[in-house]
Amino acid sequence: MYHCGHTISSEVENPCIVIEFCLLAKRLMGDQQMKAGVWFYGLGTALTGILDIAWGAFDASHQPIKSLGKNLPGQHILAYVAGVWLVAAGLAILWRRSARVGAAASAIAYLIFAAFWLPRYYAGIHAFGWRIPVLVGINFGLAQQLMLVAPAAIVYASTASPDSLLQKRAAIAARWMLGLPPVIFGLFHLTSIRVFASIVPHWMSFGYFWAVLTGIAFFLAGSAICLGIMDVLAARLLALMLLLFEGFVEIPPIFIRPHNQAAWGAAVYNLAAIGACWIFAEFLASRADRRRIGPAENVTMSRPDPVVA
Image (cartoon, helix red, strand yellow):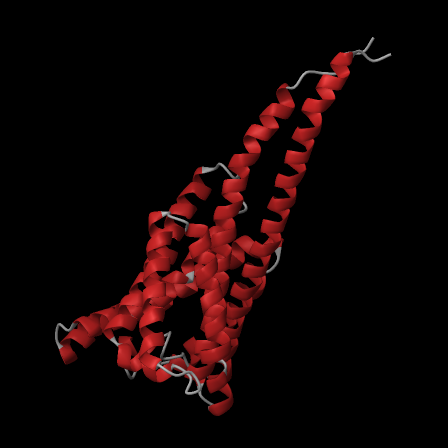
């Protein structure tokens, strides 16, 4: 028969099993949520490529290749090549076996688009002088593309060991690439209130109020992510805000101007940005869960075996 030692051991064992089960369930749920973010990001990337192919041109609002020269030869061919590249990268990142390649290809594409904005510093300052709205506006375009490099870095590093140096470096790089852009978005909103107030849907009153509120929200979310203060919550709320923008601000112009590439480009970019925030939030949450799982596993490994007569 069993001694009372078995009863004591069972009391120790059962809470450990419950704790492990809860943490495992939470981790699996986080993985599913991260996959949802990857789908937003991957489809947004693929749709961006489809737009480049459909128009045979780069989206001037997000891919200003004309900053390298208005008469740059072969722009249509380059647009087709970039489009095919983005479609392949966006689809590849959706499957585990090809996710690493898709992430690397996406990061390269968005870094190239970010580089398109660099000549704008010279051209903008030369044309308008050293004006803060001009500089912030150029930073806004550059930041939009760098923000989409962050999730690619996370997906690329997620295939490595959780405690590897690659994941740690990816987390640091992604934090700044995803955190600084919202800060710049917020500053741009606050320095160009009239422009963003005009974008607010007409059925929503107090356009200036919403423009200022949005700018403050962007700034606070980006600051929280950079500083690591409630960063998971900040990234999730940022994703929610962008999702609301998608429905209220980005999609309606498509029906008004269906042949306008910029209108489609803004809506599609926003999908990828939603995925970027979602991926980052769930990546941080999963890392935190893994750190909490560690002690539970140690308790399980060190608990005594049942005493049998």
